[in-house]
Structures are given as structure tokens and as C-alpha cells.
Amino acid sequence: MNSVKLAAVLSNISEPWLPTTVAHFNGNEVMVAKARGSYAWHKHEDTDDFFLVLKGSLTIEMRDGSVHLGPGEMFVVPRGVEHRPVANEEAHFILIEPPHTANGGTTLV
Image (tube, rainbow, N blue to C red; front, side, top):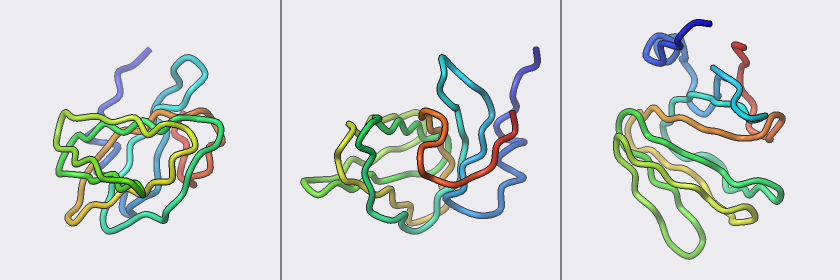
């Protein structure tokens, strides 16, 4: 068993919006990613979407409003809610989702 150094993993990520899996937790994937600009509008019919900001700020836009997140803040988008994350400047965040949730990305574990 080893700890995961999130800053080291994030330093190796060059493209925004490509999550890298760093652990598995109760059948879910724990991923880190960088954000810059806007991600596409989308929704997940079968799962919630968990975001925890580590660095910078991230706005989760939804059709009926937005949630602004800074370092140490989290938000869960309920399943079926159309949304898109937006970062005006580079932000780092953690996602927790079931495996094979449509996002793209890299797996380290």
C-alpha cells in the first residue's frame, strides 16, 4: 500500500478535461484532472457526478443555475441533471464516478 501524491500526478497531466484514475473506492474510480475553459454540456442518467476542487476555481453550470467552487469545496451533480464544468483559469479537481462513466481519460491503477 502506498499513498498517492496528487500534486505529482497533476504535474504530469498536460491536457485539460482528461481525468487520471488514482484509486478505486467502493467500486468507484477516484480521478484527478485539470480544468481550463468549458467542458461540453452533458448528463449522466445512471450516476451522480462528484467534484472536489483542489486548486483554482470551477463553476458547475446547470440549465437552472450555477455553483461556484473554490479550493476545498465540493458539489455533487445529481444524476440526470444536464451540466458543464467551466474554469476561466487552470483548476485542479477530484472526480469520483463508477468505472466506464463517459469522460475519457487515463487510468494509473
